[in-house]
Image (cartoon, rainbow, N blue to C red):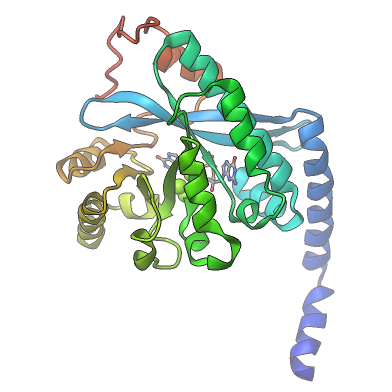
Length: 293
Ligand code: C2E
Ligand code: MG
Ligand code: MG
Ligand code: MG
């Protein structure tokens, strides 16, 4: 144990560790101010119905533009926000903004557009998680059922202690759908798939990436899609970058695709211009928005 301690102490005092600690402290300070200073925005990435090429869904992805740092990737700041609890305030900001955006677009275009928000497990574990406030907001906005979807990850479903099951049911009652994000990368939680009511299963991009060249990935994608359908879930493939991947997934019966082949995450204005404008209030397509090929 002494040896262990000695090693830790040594590690703690290396310059790179000190640098990292300083960097992290500044990041936390900046993150605290980011909500106040309105440095956050949401980008929207279309989730495309593969067979028709139609877009009725999008994932809201958080973007942070810091005055000096420039753009900071969520992969970098979300874990820090989770460690410090700042994710609670940030997560509420994301939810509120996505809900308002969904309502505004629904009103303007008369076309139901479902926005998905990522929800950190930390938000579920927190007692003051303010579920009522969220549901209250949906009522206040008069958002139709299915206007919002939350994306959760597998690890959460293993955490039986935090009343996740009850919370998911309550969300469902409030008209919120549920996606299982990054499927296949967390703990294997196949037993939990039947226990929870999940609407969409998102195949992680690590399985789609080499789909055309790796027969194991091909087999896994195929099996995941069959299993999900039999359990009553629809499937969204993440990270679809090539027409070849799309064609294989389509042939396997995959319902939705999301990825650079279709579109990168877009600003609200760009998403609106490309996918919503041109439909009238009755939801009739005025121009052809089939974006395949
Ligand atoms: P995620 O929820 O799995 O989101 C998908 C990520 O894949 C996004 O990265 C998206 O830009 C990226 N992506 C989409 N299509 C492609 C593609 O074809 N190829 C490749 N290589 N990547 C693609 P992003 O926006 O950097 O977000 C990273 C992660 O940060 C998200 O992964 C999610 O876990 C987290 N995140 C983002 N926004 C939020 C948020 O509002 N709240 C929470 N709690 N987490 C968030
Ligand atoms: Mg996601
Ligand atoms: Mg994902
Ligand atoms: Mg991912």
